[in-house]
Image (cartoon, rainbow, N blue to C red; front, side):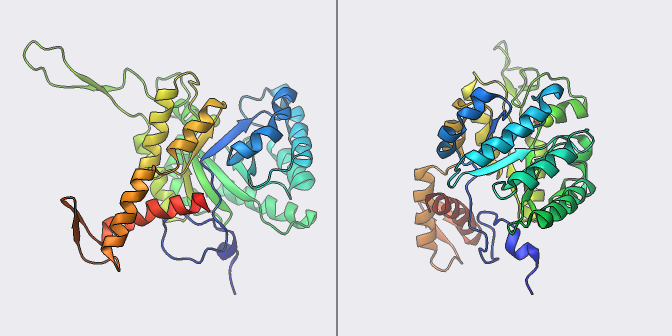
Length: 335
Ligand code: GLV
Ligand code: MG
């Protein structure tokens, strides 16, 4: 008999083998909105066709005295909106808060049929996912839901990073993991006051070259965590994401951060403002010239074994697989 895993696990793009039971669903941008903000909630129907994922946020950035309004607002938006192919996610409050249980009970009971994914913040180990998994199973059974709601973890504490593999493997409901650079910075006692992105002080200075001014290179604060998260996700067949980039006006740095994450294996990022939607769409869709090159390599490699030279570059079984990842993503996005 097939296990739940066979049915519910989303297919990591480019991953070998298991039959595609769950159709690929693009998630290049997870667009956050505050469902308790009536002006923002009113824009949801027009926004839905422009994004892959709409996420009603109940956690940080929603003040404590507005938690119930946000939850009620999300129920109302979910009931009244036709989301089409766009996924509806929510970010519930953290499991050590007074709101998380009511978030889950209300949302699954009232609009569980509309909800694709529950994003769980500040996940520190498999036990957090098991708790949500069991609650979801009970609530789904009570509500008579036939389609399981998936779970997405935010990696935003030092303990969570240390446990990332067990988090990725914790349940067949696991859809993916996002980097949460703001909370992670605080948890690690980093000396930053930003949401994602780099820092001008985190740099490497080249050795002196005579009297010439010394060249400096800013380093990426998030490389280690993203690489670790990508490995954990790829190993367990779930999807990795860059999280938020808080400097809305700095579209260049936003695009750089998203692109680095894409090149390292992430499939999407959060968009906190409409200006970040197009950045994510552009970055997390493979460039036409890269797809054309990958198709050329695949064509030239025939059965995918051996070597061929194209434009002086050696291609072999491994580059063939890399090219399949690029083409697989492009085809899935075009379908
Ligand atoms: C996101 O939740 C973050 O803390 O960066
Ligand atoms: Mg956070």
